[in-house]
Amino acid sequence: MPLIQNSSYHAPPWLPGGHVQTIFPALFRKVPLATQRRERLELADGDFIDLAWASQGRSKLAILSHGLEANAETGYIQGMARALIRRGWDVLAWNFRGCSHEPNRLLRMYHSGETEDLHRVISHALKTHPATSLDLLGFSLGGNLTLKYLGECPARLSPRLHRAVVFSVPCDLACSSQQLSLAKNRIYMERFLVAMRAKLRAKKRLFPDLLDLTGLEKIRTFQDFDDRYTAPIHGFRDAADYWQRNSCRQFLPAIRLPSLLMSAENDPFLGKSCYPREEAAASEWFHFEAPKTGGHVGFSSFGQRGEYGSESRALEFLESPNVFEAGAVV
Image 1 (tube, helix red, strand yellow):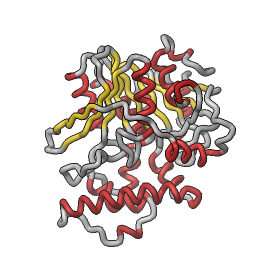
Image 2 (cartoon, helix red, strand yellow):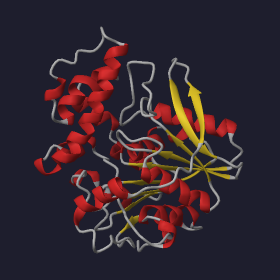
Image 3 (cartoon, rainbow, N blue to C red):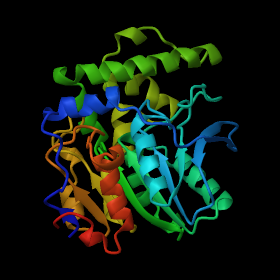
């Protein structure tokens, strides 16, 4: 039932096409830092997660999860944080392991399905913050984490969890990886790989006997990178096993928290299997909205206070007394 057929979002006409709508905000949007209080969360396995707070002890708290090779200071995270703060939320933006400008302590890093770290962050927030209502927001990889978390073990979710909103999610990791390997998407793939190679070199200095970087510069796809590094480091057989076990699409039918996924139809990162219309149509809880434009984690808009379309839509969904009337035609 919650398949939203007609989205209210439309990209500005002077930003034509999915590539421009993806690249423009990534290069040109500058957002002042809203989450300025830092905290290091020490983990039982000896590692750490760095947190960034904007906290005044309010009754509503939002936890924000970033995308691949981004961090808590990324423009779309800080833009969402500012929009939430203006409307009465406290905000916690967290850095995945190894994403806070400092290598994490273990060989393992983060990956697309590492929901245990998200659970640790949520548990810490629930213990230390007085909020009676907690919302989850995620972007791209962080959105996959969020939806997987909600659906893989619904019984462990805190009753203080309220709603979730995610954007531009690679619900089928294999499909998205194949899409990014296309020649037209080479600019994105290489940008990711440059950052990922750099992190592996840093890891090599910490664990010289555990990593073989021979041929690292020749890797050109996620298939090759995940086969050789991501999968074995994190306990998966190969890239296919890693993608299959961690794609959130299989967990969507089990979600029992009001949730919205918004992915643009012209998102260059997403293939056909990343648009879970059937799951939304069959669900009472999971909403799916696919505006025709927006790019990947783009959704540029130049209205009041510089708020982007993703931010306005997220707040609309979170604040609506009835999610079925939250700003779009169902």
